[in-house]
Image (cartoon, rainbow, N blue to C red; front, side):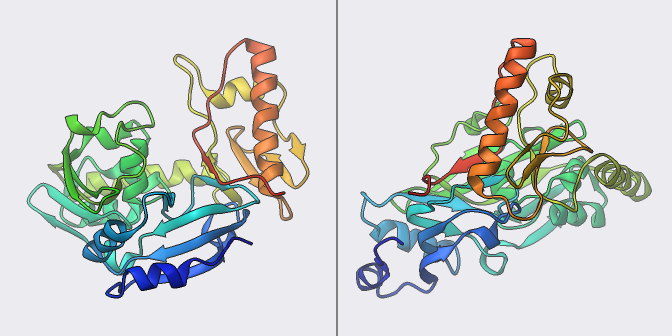
Length: 306
């Protein structure tokens, strides 16, 4: 357990409207269903409330923002400081006008794709296959099925560590493969995307194809974190993992998926340590077999359990 600092925070921020919880388990908030507690879990009411909180938060208290936890391992010792989780109520709105879709950072990628499709806007279908939120898509330049966030983003809005509001255009995001160049403590709150007005039947067919691919090629009904490793240049991570004999490999309650080798699974009783150890074992075996270094795509945060 961490020291409870919620009373101190509330005293420093009497006008705060969001919810502060001490030593709140993060395991239920991640797809792997593992990990320790957050010293403080803060759910802001809206963008103004988030800015107010950050403006009054002591600079020595670390912060980390999480979405739906689909691409995340929280280590068993938990996270000191404040974990900020944006809720759909304050940050989940989506709307479309012309060829532009606007979305809050807590909006599910899938919902944004559906909002675009309902307005006959093409180009965002790839989001239908990404099990995360727009905030995560911005942070990681999320992509699937031939599309990436950088292909459609117009502008992202964010709040800095000092509570200042920022806007980043596409170039300002400094996108690269599965990453952006924005400082980690900056918290995205919304984004605007541009697609192309197109035939609704064509858009729906593309989205159906994305969903069919996920259902037939990925273990989407398991406790998993999505793609574990980035694809090295010129290679597919899953093929390298399979060639190194890691399909089905287990460590404790964690297993490499039999369906898709670039997915790790919590078979029921895994710890975060099991899952991360399995990932590092896979990396070592791939390096020994092919000489290629795999790099984590899943974010790993927190401290080891003492």
